[in-house]
Length: 268
Image 1 (cartoon, helix red, strand yellow):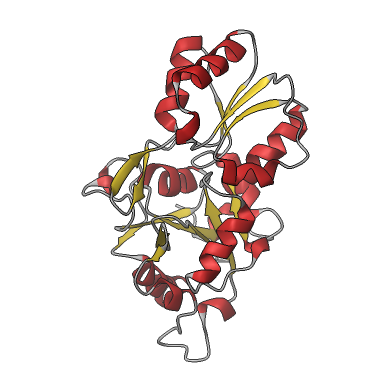
Image 2: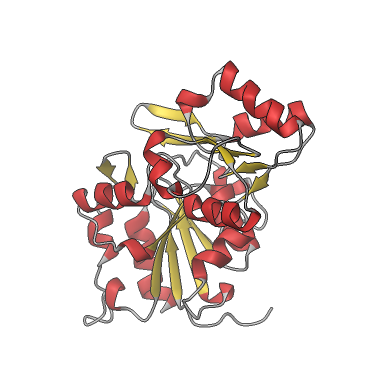
C-alpha cells in the first residue's frame, strides 16, 4: 500500500459531532483550538491544516447555522462552512431548472434568486411540514412527468435532544419507489460533495481526514473519496455502527475532542 501523504485538511461534521441542536458536545469548543501536547506552540487553528465544516443540514440556511454555532461558542468563519444546500443550489443553477423546494422555510434564503414558478424539478431536504400526502403527491406527479428528483441528502435519521428522528432519506426512497426513478444526491456520502468541500484548499483527498458521527454518510463517504474517516460515538452513533461499512473507519473515538487529540499527536 502506498504511503499516505502528510495531512493538509480536516473536514468536520457539525450536527451530532460538534453539537446536538442548541447544545454543544462537551469540550468541542475547546478541542477546536486544542494545544498539541508535544508541540506547545501548536494549536489546531494554527496547525498546518485547512479546516472545513461540512454538513448535510437542511433545517436552516448557512447564515442561521453560523449564528447558532457562534452562540454556542464556536470560532468558525462562514467561508469555512460547506453545506449540502450550497451543493444543491449549484446543481440547480447548472441544470437551469425551477424546483419544487421541499425544504424547511429556514433554508430558503440559500435559494434566493432561484426561480420556483411552474416547477420542473423536485428538491427534497429535511422538511417535516412538507412531508404530507398533498405535497408528496405533487412531487410524485412532477417526477412521473419527467422532472428530475434531487435529494439534498438521503440520511436515514438524525439526532435530536429527545432521540433519533427520521431524515429525508425515507421520503426520497418513497418517491423513487413510486416513480421508478433514481434521485440525484448532492450531499454526503456522495464523492462529489467531499471533493467540492476540498476545492480551493490545494489538498488531495488522501491528504484529508473527515470526522463525523454518521458511519455511512460521513466516514464511509469520505473514505470512498480517498480520505481517512474518524467516527465519533456521539450524535446519531449507535453501538456497532463501525461494523456497517467496508473498509471500516480509520479510527473510532469517543468524541470530537478525542479525535482532535489523535490528529495532533499522530497525524501532524
